[in-house]
Length: 296
Ligand code: GDP
Image 1 (cartoon, rainbow, N blue to C red):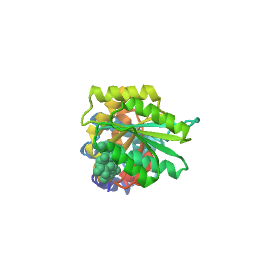
Image 2 (image 1 turned 90 degrees about the horizontal axis):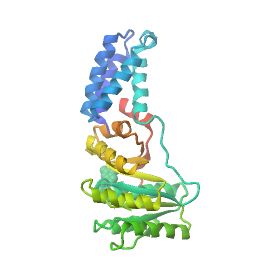
Image 3 (image 1 turned 45 degrees about the vertical axis):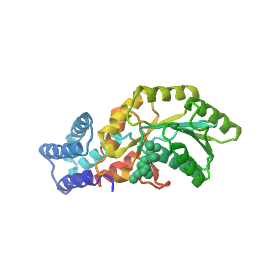
Image 4 (image 1 turned 180 degrees about the vertical axis):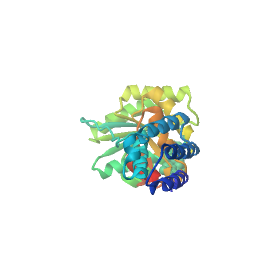
């Protein structure tokens, strides 16, 4: 399960506090020392941890909390609320255009799960009675177009492709014209990933963005890479102004650092999480539910 390590450690810390009839300032400080270590071990960004700890302390040491009838519970409630805030507060939904088609651009590094999540997202939207069209704009990875076509066949969703000798900008543009002609109301563009962030990759993505003016630019990042995922998100956001993040492979992520830090570091919300290789293993991201899951 995701977050085992962190959840286990935090629950142990909280259990010590939960039953206490009286909680002192020193108890809170001690607890927050343990929370701080647990978060750092979970690979949460250092500054995020520091700010989080000081916000919780400031609220928890307030007199009403410590003098309440159940001080231990109240302190834990503060931690839960602050953790929820850290991850964005409320659910961040997809921005659907009032005038179809809604254009969604998927970006990310190779191997993060971009193509898989292009399929997952289209299936998710299909279930909401949308009629997606997928555009195969990754012309560099030899199997990418085929992979998308196979996904499309499985899902009975059309895939627009022009092979790998036309520029991705042109493919995206023609794909959208096709979507309009065919009355498809959502277009998802699978763009190329690279092993590392480089200027060529970013320039190409910028060109596509400027040409098609997407309503959503979603970065697909691998949760298992922890703070690296956060750094990748930062770079993409600086160049492209992302509208959201899809955090993948959360099923294999025992630490949870990326889920906790991405929003706080980049300002960009997590909109979906990937929970496995199957096409229905995608879920909207709810900060409050995630916080409760982490805190047990
Ligand atoms: P791309 O290069 O970013 O397009 O990556 P792919 O979509 O080809 O995915 C790379 C690998 O990660 C594949 O083996 C996928 O099955 C796997 N994968 C994608 N998403 C998830 C996920 O949420 N959980 C797990 N466990 N594996 C995933």
